[in-house]
Image (cartoon, rainbow, N blue to C red; front, side, top):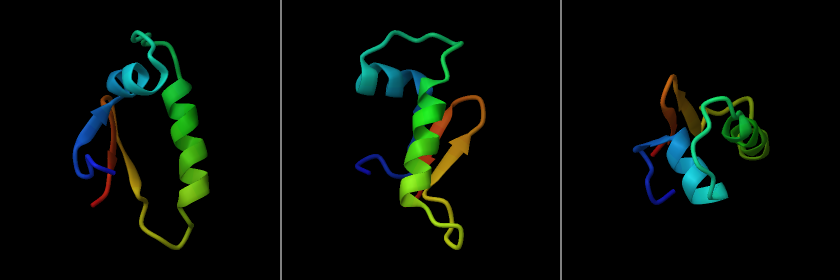
Length: 61
């Protein structure tokens, strides 16, 4: 949340959260973002976490 509005790349998430080097074939970030969305977002609300296709994710302000 401290970087709300800033696009965070999948590479940065892999490095900072899981301490993994970038592997373009891994879907671990996508899987965990889906889990997180299912826990914090409801169907009636605007999405809090948005996908920036081809780069990463952004948290709405």
